[in-house]
Length: 315
Length: 240
Image 1 (cartoon, chains in turn cyan, purple):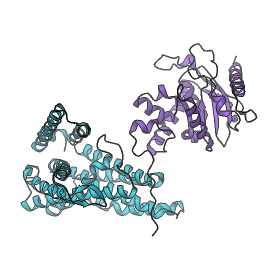
Image 2 (image 1 turned 120 degrees about the vertical axis):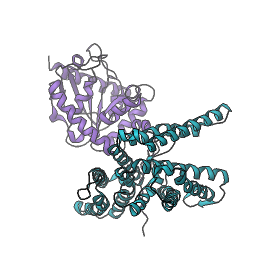
Image 3 (image 1 turned 45 degrees about the vertical axis):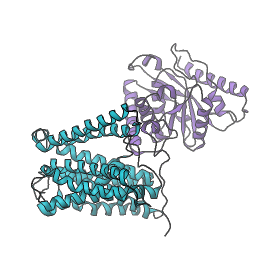
Image 4 (image 1 turned 90 degrees about the vertical axis):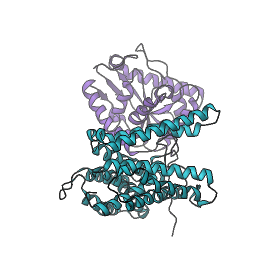
């Protein structure tokens, strides 16, 4: 990945055209609704959020491999910070600092080349890093000679690193693969479409709640509709990964359709348990970073290991 | 199994602008790191560019909360006072800053809140409310409040009358007040100039005062203001 390759990549340019087209279309629909006298203030706020986020994401991928990995790492850092603040882990600066340090290590490991395989991204160390990080986090109470409340802090720190850091950073590691543009852009696009489909189908046909104790807004109809849309997306966007068999396309559809919603539900029950509505206020009209990337945290690592299974470590 | 307790911060739903204006502030790692580094740089800059000299550091109490009161000639006053307190206390040092000026826009709020650790003070309408915030702050052990009782920067070099806030804050309490005088601020950075000039700054810190023996009355408020005015002025005359 580099600026030159992005300019020559049909996949990258096609996605830019698709997303630009969709943005213009959505803007036009909002404009017409506004002229018809409808109240569009809430969707307009969300739309403005997209107008900032989409150029940022595309611009980062355009800049190349390093920018993409660092960009995903920044999202992981902000995501972890939101989680740490919401749970109160943030009050413990030792533990929060240790996880920040670990996230930095993770980024370095994703950036440097593998000494054995001579390819970008130190795959072996990336996969083994949780062992060392968990060990280090467990050591901190010993170093500080503390016991009271440490189980909660240690558990939250490990969950924070593994889930919001390591699992999410698989997305950044995809930038090291030869098909990076197709994988990254497809995932980013499909996961968001999946979210929007769940919302739209839920609004139109939703009656039965999917998980009423976790999220009052998610419905069975929305969920089924989203899986159906997500199952069709890999076929429609097959150009993103021309080397995929139909089996891979089906698996990709399931991973995005089911995994995306599971990621959403995970954040939902975390928020419910804590008793907050949004994870933060980073993105106007969307909530915190975690409210936006929650679906990706489930999808990215499973998709990553699916292609690794079929196409080897070089992906 | 015992249930876990979560402690989400009260400002979790606040926007960035609100977070910056909110007071008291939550301790946060990034602002603390930035502020610590900025304070180090500031000390270096003040010592070299302005050849800053500080007398009377020995008057600063080791423990407890206290108030630093100083004449106000330029923005350098605040920066110079921040250099006078021990570096370890920089996150608990709060210069009272006019909310209508220092918190009027997002970039200004960011500088005031993160670099200066300023306490947003309402000069006009809600002065009493702001004084209550100050009083609450000083209840906690180890906080330092920096106040410029003139309320605005001088343009002539003559010290203005002290406004009543400081008197109302300390009358009848055991709060410690240290009068300070900064010389050279007006020459170094007059109101209206974009950048400071390399002129010498000389800060004198006076002996600690308390006004617990005076009752909370208008008369004693005036007496305290007069006394502090006299002491700050006296420190200034030491240089002549």
